Amino acid sequence: MSQASPVPAIRIRGLMKRFGDRTVLDGIDLDVRDGDVLCIIGPSGSGKSTLLRCVAFLDAYDEGEVNILGRLIGWRETPMGREPAGEAELAAVRAPLGMVFQHFHLWPHLPVLANVTLALRLARGLSKQGAEETGLAMLGRVGLTSHAGHFPDQLSGGQKQRVAIARALAVRPKVMLFDEPTSALDPELVGEVLSVMKALAADGMTMVIVTHEMGFAAHAANRTVFMDRGRIVEAGTPQDLFRAPQSERLRQFLETWR
Ligand code: ADP
Ligand code: MG
Image 1 (cartoon, protein in one colour):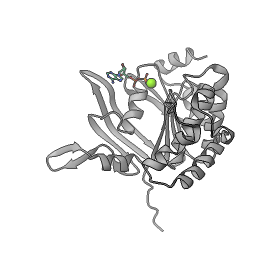
Image 2 (cartoon, rainbow, N blue to C red; image 1 turned 135 degrees about the horizontal axis):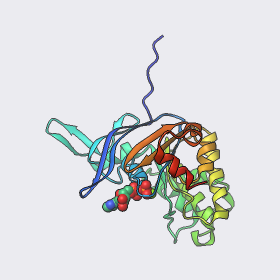
Image 3 (tube, rainbow, N blue to C red; image 1 turned 90 degrees about the vertical axis):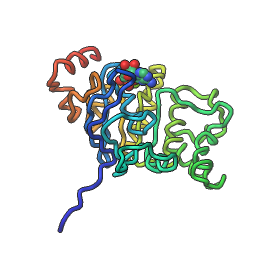
Image 4 (cartoon, protein in one colour; image 1 turned 135 degrees about the vertical axis):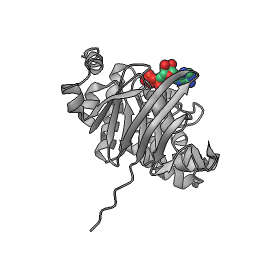
């Protein structure tokens, strides 16, 4: 029996991104497969955030391809060359992605539950009741059902980030992208957010996580990528990268985190 090769959740080939005359992503090739928990590590300024932003087409990339579940994001190929995809097409290709950023970007004037259900109501057109059922279920996954009626400024940073995760989960993403989700948190609040992320990973969620939490990367990820100066310098299992770094650059980078 023939086996169809499954379409990667995310497929990146020859990705180039420039800001002015600065090349920030310099030929990235990467596949994210179903169920992968991929951690991206690397020094500040190496292009990690730009990579996630290009994957979601929050930043337009200049060359190469990013495919989400087999569909090119952001551009439409025409016989005349590439042209920008229309808004509706971009939204449809982006729909399988959930994003969580360093800063939580919650709406301060809305209660927690409304923050989580907003996209369901506006973008997906769910009824209030349907959206709230889903929203409460997602708050349950991050352990915050009892905070549904609170306002963001009544929450700790760790709780706010868990709400942001619930909000991202509400639209049932196929892949979750996290950009340093714990970097803005006081140290004692980091653990509760990482626990939620570990539970998601254990549930089989496909995740791409930019993080400086080396312990998390070592234990929760099945794949690790080290970026420096816009390139992937090393890729492999966490054991490969943390126990047997091949490059001087990764060795030096890991030294600074011991
Ligand atoms: P990292 O997340 O690894 O710290 P970034 O992707 O944020 O790195 O940034 C990579 C490089 O791109 C940095 O030199 C940064 O200054 C530059 N950069 C990022 N965003 C912009 C932008 N909007 N305009 C100009 N330069 C940018
Ligand atoms: Mg960054």
